[in-house]
Amino acid sequence: MLSINHLAVILMMVFALLLGVILITISALLGRVKPDAKKLSVYECGIPPSGENRERYSVKFYLIAIFFLIFDIEVVFLYPWALIFKHNLHAGPFLLIEMFLFLGVLIVGYLYIWKKGGFNWTS
Amino acid sequence: MGMLLNAVPILVWVERRGSALIQDRLGPNRVGPFGLLQPVADVVKFIFKEDPIPPHAHKSLFLLAPIFALVPAAIAFAAIPFGDTLELGNRTIHLQIADIHIGILYIVAIGSLGVYGILLAGWASNNKYSIFGALRSTAQVISYEIAMGTALIGVLLVYGTFSLKEIVYLQEHVWGIFLQPIAFILFFIASFAECNRLPFDLPEGEAELVGGFHTEYGSMKFALFFMAEYLHMVTLSAFMVTLFFGGWQLIPGMLTVADWVGIATYPKSMGLALLKVLAFILKTSFFALVFVWVRWTVPRIRYDQLMSLGWKVLIPLGLFNILLTAILLYIGWL
Image 1 (tube, rainbow over the protein chains, first blue to last red):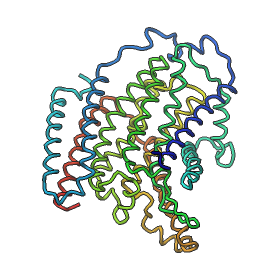
Image 2 (image 1 turned 120 degrees about the horizontal axis):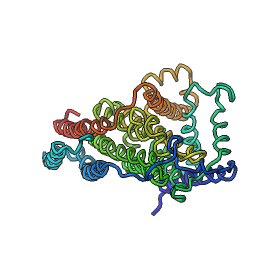
Image 3 (image 1 turned 180 degrees about the horizontal axis):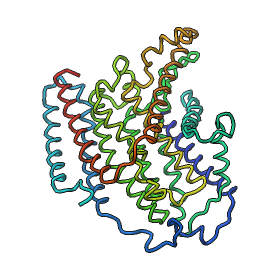
């Protein structure tokens, strides 16, 4: 079921895609083409490139990605709760306590990561 | 169908706003009056520039990356309402490209798709600077996305709806910033990091990484990254205005000025609707200007500072804000 709103988004997407493709094509067709060895070499501030292009990088980036997964899923779990919270205030403190327990577990994990030095970029 | 036809000029309008922002500098003043035609000259130059694809790059991904960066930046705006309803003849038009009932989720989801363009560009370029820039950018964007997510939960608690249209209606009397000041500060800081602007522009820090992820890009492909960045800025400003500053709700005093000039009275509903669109444009332009302003004011911070600000300050603050808001709502103070 496509509503007019979905169509508008899809139309915009197609428009943006076409814009990108057309602009790149025009510039590829009209641009001056005069490559030489120096121009096509790997850019490294004008000196001849040294070593591998894809160097090894810090494991910290992986750690950040894993923390992101945990916390982002937590945020996703909080969204439905936040959405209905205001409309169910009359139903007693159950919703509030439930989410405090959830956040409590999360905060314990968060403090554990902190104490283990997971957030220290230089260590 | 009427909505769809209306979407086309709005699209053009979005594009124009994106590119108009790029003029915001004193520099070019030769082309046209006040250098107003400079972007046109820039585009011509971009088109005619040589555009070599480095042989060491992954060719198809290298070509695809700029488009991947542009598309999410261009479509995220669709969910933001930029005006109240407009009466044209016997039709009522909502001034919003797509009235998506999960607008907040839509913008957050589409906004974070932009990372793929940057990551692809960095990886496909096969260059040290590019790949470091891309990695830094990804780590930064995902870290600050959590801060932004926690800020949005505070907002959501207060409004109780995902629909941006309803959120604007709910701010008729009180703007969101007075209900959620902490969330606004979090969102404001995180949005600078999300679109890689100074003081968080480490992915492209010229002094360290040449150009970061777009080091090997030139010509029109570079221009597309540039456009994507500016569109992202405009969208985030508009999002900020919609959540915290009443969206298209009139700025206090605007109606008085309009009455004095006599715009609001002419065709009553039409004038008022246009005035609301003007209020939205003014607010959004203000925040887009703040982006530019901050860029030339605040120095770049170090990468470890960036990470500890995100993880050790903003995220705890966001969690605290959620707890505080929930308790205040429960006692009935909010």
